[in-house]
Image (cartoon, rainbow, N blue to C red; front, side, top):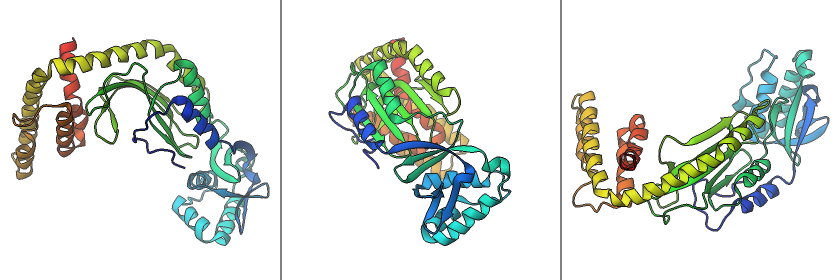
Length: 343
């Protein structure tokens, strides 16, 4: 279930709105701890203690890991998915055969089964540190209070929430910088739990955001053991100072971008010239390199108005053509030159 595209801008949505959505989404979620020997299969599909259950694609992937562990047989996930969807009889025979070949220590091992009603969402180790999306959002609300949401993505495998700071600056124009917090989590082993606080730049009209510099504060942990407590302790300890720092930085950035726009333009042109020269030398003046130079040397020209819109789009175009190796460097050029004037 996709509530919203991750990068789609959403107006008038708050953290509390997202919390209510997450609660509704999780209405039928529950966990069970069972031994592997409780698994089975029949012509309807998977069974747990004799109860017929459906499975998501993620759960089938996890089931493959459970069956491969200790069996000496390397079952392929794509094969298991195929027979599950097309031939339940063959699926049943395969599952029961592999379960019967597991050693006793594996069949007696407990696993966590994450369910949505009668559908298995995931099979996890009992060492899996459960962080449900509802709990994560509630903890952040205690820490920060309610805020506007820039974008929100919620599915069975992933949650991503981009939260604007209450004192955000800018007018939602291309190139604006926002203090923002990003919360990510997966309830089904797809991603780590993570928190990022930093400056983000609005890079295109559909609301897509990108980190504006590489000094963002971030915390991430895998879902295991005591990592959940460490995760929240680290965020809580650093949150007040980080929040104040990014608010101040964003305000200075927006002010100085307008005050020093021509200085930044000149510095950027010099840097682009050096980048292109280095690229050309490293490619021995090849035709493809020359075409790149011809196309992007005039990334900012005198007959093109120097607005933030043109600046960001031209810079993004240049970085994409130059290639991923230089993308991060090119994307942060404007920010770097602005910081020279801050310092």
